[in-house]
Length: 283
Image (cartoon, rainbow, N blue to C red; front, side):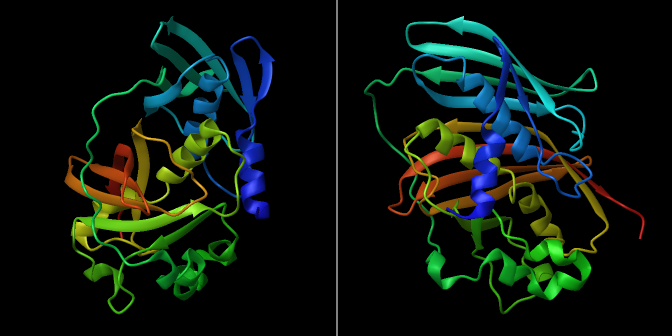
């Protein structure tokens, strides 16, 4: 397991303060605000810590205020319902006395049922693609040395390397991703790690039709507004997963993107949807 992945696991291991109350911290980085995938992953951990049976099958969340990376985050869990098949939890993340994020999660006791999934799109093998750090190397002067820092998630974008990013006008993009090391055999941890990873590239997809993707000096402010995930089938976040992303719409200062996560065998395991704020700043 890489050091970066070990730090992510520690980040997701919340401190229990009292029944239904947990505390999470942020990494010591020079971020202006807490990364959305972090607060979503930690909130899902908090919800799961109060559930006795079933696996998470969906969550719906809203980003309410920017998170302050310098202070801990308090997660308050409300036990909405404990049923025979479904369990529901509401989590509110609080900083400086105000809610910065909320998440409603549902857990389902496993049972048999119908089985169908849309086929996986064609994509190059992850081993044939450059690492994220290799992709960012030409932008190191603009992004600074942080662009070469180790990441807990190994992300391999499927975009062409023989064309400049502003020519990637297709309203979809694919990326292979996996945790950078072997994870413990805890399905909930795998779900939380993928929750963290799912927020890294999704909103950028809504910039693609405008020729703005992967331009560090593009003068755009972006922020996640909401994030929803549906967990269809078991998976391992430390094995290659194809993240197929597309954008149906961008309008009114908002972009909308949808993601489908497949195992390497082509099985659809997770669906994701997100809307985000996209504002073009003055040049």
